[in-house]
Each structure stands twice: as C-alpha cells, then as structure tokens.
Image 1 (cartoon, helix red, strand yellow):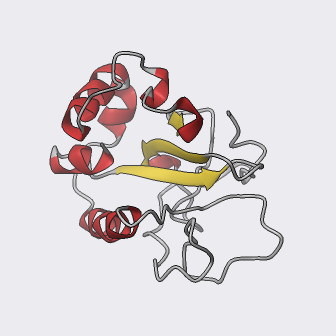
Image 2 (cartoon, rainbow, N blue to C red; image 1 turned 120 degrees about the vertical axis):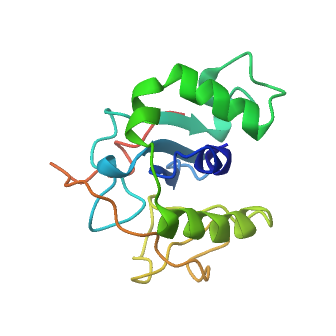
Length: 162
C-alpha cells in the first residue's frame, strides 16, 4: 500500500516498523516525514499524532478496516487517502531517496524479511543498519533521516497495540 501511495505522489509518507513485545506480531505505522526522527529514519517522534497503525494481529483488516480484507495495494492506498486525509496531505510530495530505500526494503519483505526499528531486544542492533525479522545482519541500510524532533523518544512499550 505504501509503495502505491509513493507512486501516487505521497513519497513523504514513511513507515515505522516494529515487533510486539512477545515477538508474535509485526507492527507498521504509517506517518509523514515530519513525524520521523532526524536521528533514526524509521522511528516516530510522536506515536499518537499523525499516524495510522497496523499490526499483523489485525490480519487482513488493515488499520481495523473490515471492508478491506480483499483489497489490492492500490485499493488500500485509495482508502488510506480518503480515511487519513491529514496524514496523506502531510505526506504529499517527492522524496526519492526514501522511495528508493523503500523499494530495496520491499525486495527483502517479498522474501519474508520485514524491517524492525523497535522491539524488546537484548542487545543493540548495529549502527547504520535496520534489522529485519531475519535478524540484525539484514543488509538493509537505515532509511534516510526524518524531519522531526522527538519530545521523548518512543520505545517499544509506547508503540503498542496488539
């Protein structure tokens, strides 16, 4: 869906992916570049503001939408713009470095390796690289920096929901 949004001119939309404390669910919030930290290209500044949240615990009910179970990525993108107009507006515009990173990430995701920016880790991931569900050594570089400044850095507990 986010790739489709990028193709439609919403390249300033970003994902903030993570893992639930149990490790049972992958989480992905969609926000705009102004709500992504300058110090970490995949962490939000404010989890409660300008963000749509999905967890694999929702299954095919993306964002809790019970009318989207069979939708294509393009159909989900259309619903996203309709249902989250403020986020879409703030995510409108070109951001080719991020859109390029996103395509690289999709290549890994198609093999089942989903990016993880936050989780209950026992050790610290390597600097400059974004871990995936396959582990710390993912080969996925950190996405480009955001434009936001966090008032308090979010942690896995604040990025909850499933």
